[in-house]
Image (cartoon, rainbow, N blue to C red; front, top):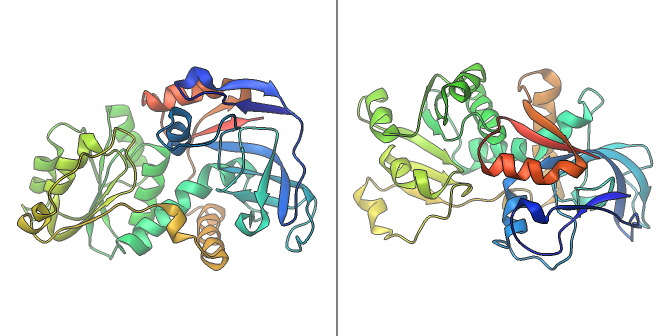
Length: 320
C-alpha cells in the first residue's frame, strides 16, 4: 500500500512516500481503507521531534474511510461501515489501524472527506466552547487564526451559542473568510489587544481561544476582562515561555488553561457524544466545513510546508 514514512525528525522533506505492507488488525482493532486523512499541527510537532516518537513511523492521527477488516472481539463495526477517528495509527496511508474503542460511525448524510476534515478540530471546538469555557449568549470572545480550519469551526461553534466573535487573521483575504464564517469583527495581529479593548468599551473579552502561542500570548492576556479565561489550546507560532502566575492575579484574577482534546474524550461515551455533536452540525448544515486544499498522499511534504508557512485557510486533506 502507499504510505508516508518518517525515518528521521526534521523539516517537511523527511515525509517520504513509500510502499509498505498493509497492516493486519489485532484483537480489538479495525483496519480502514482511508478515504481522506486530516493534516494537523500536531503532526508537525511529531515530525520535528517536539513530541517524541519512536522512528520510523507513518504519521497522521485523523482519518475517515470504510472498514476493510476487523480483529477478534470487535462487535460494533463491520466491513464496509463508514467510520472516522482522531486516534489513528498512521493515517497518512491507504490503509490504517484504529482501536475499535476510538472509532466513531460517520452518518450517511456526512461526506467522508468532510468527516475527516471536521472530526478532530470539530471536537476541539466543541470542548473549548462547551467545557473549557462554556460560552453563554451575549459573551464576547476572541478567536485567533480565525480563518484556519480550527478557527473557522471555533467561530461557528461560538456563534451558535450566541457569542459575539472577534477574530484575528494574517491577511485581509483571511479576515473575509472568517467573516463569512460568522465573525462579527476581524482584524490583523498588530495591536489587537488595544483594538479588542476599544470594541468592548474597555472591559475585555470573556474568553480568548488561542492556538498560536508565543506571538499572541501577551496580547491575549491583555484582551481579557476581569476573571476572563485564556484557553491556550496550541502553540502553532511557538511555545509560551515560563511566566509568573501572580500576573493572573494582578490582571484581574484571570484563568489560564492549556487543554488538549485527549483529556475531553477519555471515555468512549464522551468521544461518541462529541463526535455525534460535530457530525450533527455538519449533517444539518449548521457548520460549514471549509477544505482549503486537497493533496495527493505523495504531496504530504508540500502540505506541511504550506501549513507551517500559514499559506493556507481551512482544513488540509491528504487523499491516498
